[in-house]
Amino acid sequence: MTSTTRTDCPSCGEPVSDADLYCESCGAELQPGATPSTPALDTDTEPTIELHTGAPAEAFTPGPCRSCGGTVGADGYCETCGTKASKPRDHFSEQPAPWVAAVCDRGIRHSRNEDAVAIAADPEPGSRALLVVCDGVSSSLDSDVASLAAARAARDVLVAGHAQGMGTESSREAAVIARLNAAADAASDAVLENTSPDSPNPASCTFVATVLEAGLLVAGVVGDSRAYWFPDDAEAVGLTVDDSWAAELIATGVPRQQAETGPQAHAITRWLGKDAPDHTPRTTTLRVNGPGWLLVCSDGLWNYCSEAAPLADLVRQTAAAHGGEPLATSSALVDWANAQGGQDNITVALARLP
Image (cartoon, rainbow, N blue to C red; front, side, top):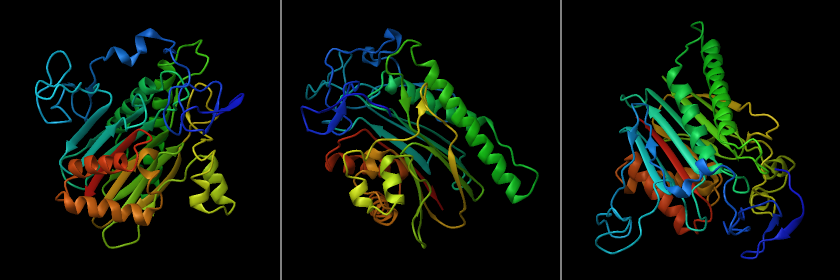
């Protein structure tokens, strides 16, 4: 993203610009008192969150207290331990089918959750799954609202379309890629609809989506959220390449660990938003014909385990400890990222192929 005068974050010392509202590294608020430019989109008013799962939308209802498991009262505090309940946007999950699930969490260091996820799946394991993750850019206004709208808009386009091409494998792949492009268009439109026309720092977010249908897996990305395929009996595969300064350094031969921990590691080169240069996703296609895990996630997870092979080991070990259940595994991976420091919002979406 373009920036103006560079300064240092007063909390962690990482470089920031004078236009940033929050530090990308630690989440510290840089401009106290700043409010979204569009009052109607201010999520601090705690609106009702409707979590779509490919079926008719259901209103979000607060779950048990995350500290002790007690009941959260009407005043927003736990009736057992007195802990204030998190906002609905801070932590939510979706599970449209037993084999597909996602968890989205604020993390520890950020003051709000700018990640978003929207998923859908058919009941039969391995048949059809649609996973979308968007990560709002912290330095832009209303990015938490825009990312959620973008993820849901993209998911709804993917759910509605089921084109199979002309009967050949190549035309089928082309049809799915066209649907992914249409989903990215819808996500971009949703971001623009949730951006004030006179916003000095318009909302923006990343975009990654995967379509799994009858053995064909297609992934599309704009930004630095990622998709991975972890087969049980073969090498782990990173399905996406980041649109980021770090990825450009890696392409020139800079070691991954050095590139992904440098001062500009999280500077993205493409995104969704009013000032986006291009939002056509880069796509990858893969035939999957065996058991494994499909993972779609934000950098809040892969920050702590970037390469495909060790991340595959982490997912497999976590799944084994939770009976191979996708929702429990997704939640445990979020907990693991928080235990590493939780410096960013965290989203984990998983599909288990039998």
